[in-house]
Length: 81
Image: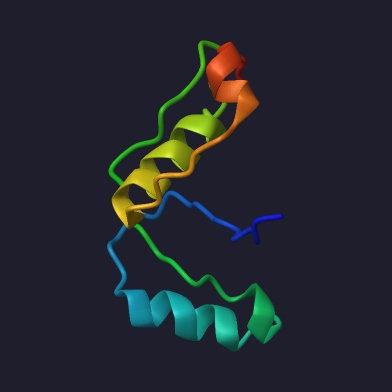
């Protein structure tokens, strides 16, 4: 079984530095919940009902990190979350 990493995404008004994000998290949540990866995007891919398409976000992040093993049945089936 492959280990899982968690991704947190947020829409912010200004562009903080990666160190600021990690420092903010380290001072407020458990160390194991602090994000390993931080990625800034201008917008999220949305469904027709205004929800974030999480599978698209996951796929884009995996591609940017160079992770080739993307096996998410929801994206292959075209389902939205």
